[in-house]
Every structure is written in structure tokens, then in C-alpha cells.
Image (tube, rainbow, N blue to C red; front, side, top):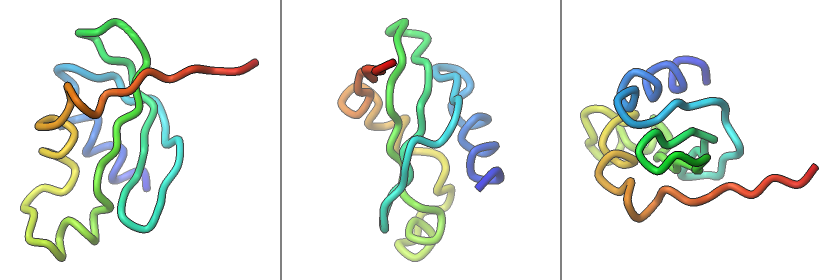
Length: 80
């Protein structure tokens, strides 16, 4: 998983500071990130590397979150 996290951090370094994985499902991974443009924590959902490769995506850690960021950057509410 650290390889995917490292690739995401590199691919989205211009906008997001990706902190850690929040969760995952069969098709996607969800990461906690700080959106520098919005100035708040967000959840980034990206397809699993294996799924993206099977569908023919050249760079599974790129593209999805970047292309959909305005619609998929969700606020994160923490409970103590």
C-alpha cells in the first residue's frame, strides 16, 4: 500500500497533502488529505491499482482524483 500512497503523494503534490488511508473497498481506496486550495481536510477516492490497470488506465494513481477533485473532495468531520 505504501507504493500507492507514494505515487498519490507525488501525483497530487501540487494541490493535496495526502496523510493516510481512511478505508478501502473492492474497487477503490479512500485517503485523508489536506486540500491546499480549499484549506480543509478532504477524502480522496481513487480506483485500486489492479482495477485501474485491468481497465486500461496508464497511471492508476493519477487522473481520477485530479480530474474529479471539485466534485469528489469531501469535507471530513472528526469526532474526538
